[in-house]
Length: 129
Image (cartoon, rainbow, N blue to C red):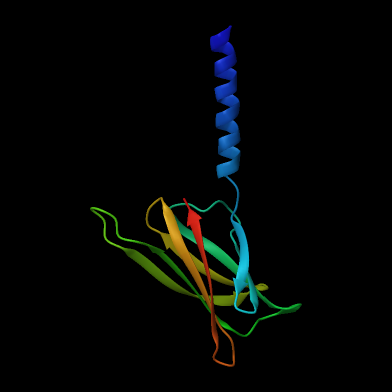
C-alpha cells in the first residue's frame, strides 16, 4: 500500500514538474525609464528560440528603437565563456530575434534598447534551460 501511495505521489510530482518546465517564458523589468517585457511562444530550450521584446515608455509603445539581445554564459572549469548578440527587428507589434542557446544551464540576458536620441538603456535578466 505504501509503495502504491509513493508511486502515485511521484507520478503527480513528475507531471507537475513537467507542466512547470513546459511554460513559455515571460519576464519584464525596467531599463532606465523604459519598461521592457520579453517572452517566447514556447518553452525556452537548447537551440534556436524566438524571443519577442516589447518596449514601453509610460503608456506609449516604443517602435523606433534599436534593440539587441545578448545571451551569455560565464566560463566554468573545462568550458569557455559563451556569448551571442542578436539584433531584433520590429515585426508584428514587437521586436523579434532568434537567439541560440548552445547548451542547458543559466544564461545571462541583456536587452539593450537604443532610442532615437542615442541613449542606451539595458535590462539585465537570466533564463534557465
